[in-house]
Every structure is written in structure tokens, then in C-alpha cells.
Image (cartoon, rainbow, N blue to C red; front, side, top):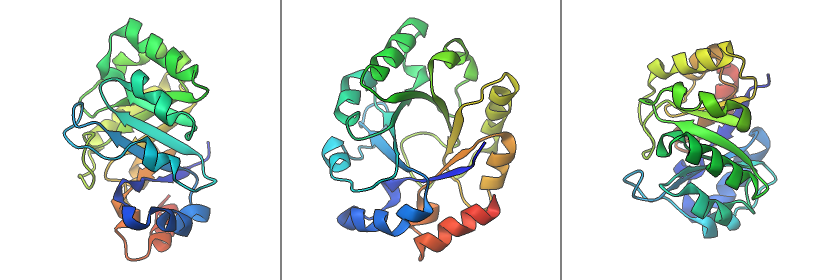
Length: 211
């Protein structure tokens, strides 16, 4: 399975967002969008008007860190390829209905898990989703330290036969990316390691070298 790098624009300079994206576009495999509502997580990030104005040919993943993902997914679906929401929000019935509701918008749907949440939450719906996003920090803040204890979830997902994308987000840098790849992740989300570097293109190349 191909390893993909997905820069998170949360760490980019929003005053020149499209310029930042153009710089790294041909060196990246996708873009990652972190949408926060100030309720499910303490912070507020940005909304669909920002996403609508992003100029890129890269596929975009949209991670909804919000309490009502289905309500707001329709605002992002026209501009992105895949939408993730947090599995811990719902019981099994509402989990499946939310997945189906997002897919009806014409995008793929994935589930995200915070570090303290078990993959048992998502086991019953693994056949219904297109990807899993393992958080290696707690959702809601950039620049946190990588939590290696979450790697066991990735091992288990691969061991039980999950062959679709497994994304990992949080504290990914040239030191931690190899650990995540060795566990079985294949999409690596990096924000501050790329956009806070003096040379974002060089930072991406260093991440690829580390793989």
C-alpha cells in the first residue's frame, strides 16, 4: 500500500494560504482540513468559505471535529473528497446512519478515533467506511506530542483485515513517521512539521526520506 503525505493546512499562514499550498502542492499527495466547532473540541478553526476558496488539484480530506457532523458535512462535501467524523459521538445505529448520510453527499466517509477511544467502537461498521483516522494526539490543538501508545490500534486494524487507508494525525515528524508506518499506517498528516519549518518543501522531502 502506497505511503501518502497529507499536509494539514491548520499550521499554514492563512494570510497567504493558497500561496502556501502552491509551494507544497506537487510534493504532497493530499491536503488535510481540520474543522473545529468550539464545542466537541475547545478551539474554533475555519469553515466552508475558507475551504471553498482553496485552489488546488490535490484531493482533500476533511476532518470534522464537531458535534453534529451530518448537519455540516453538506457545507464541505462540494469541495472535498472524503469526510471524517468522530466515532465516539454516536451509538452504533446513529453511527451507521451518519456514515450513510455523508456518503449520500457524494463523498467517501471515514471515522476518527481520539487516543483514549477503542477500535471496538468502529469494528461493527468497518465494512461501511472508506478509511480510519487514528489520532496520535487529542483532537483540537496543533503542535502536540506524538502518543506512541495509539499504534497498537493500527496493528489490530491491519491484523483483522482492514486494507483501506489508515491515516495518522498528531505529532508526525521525521522521528515519528517511521514508527507510524511500521505499525501499518499509510497516510501521514503533518502540520507544524511542514508549515512551521523554514523550508516546507525540504520538510516534506525529509519526511519521505524518513519513510
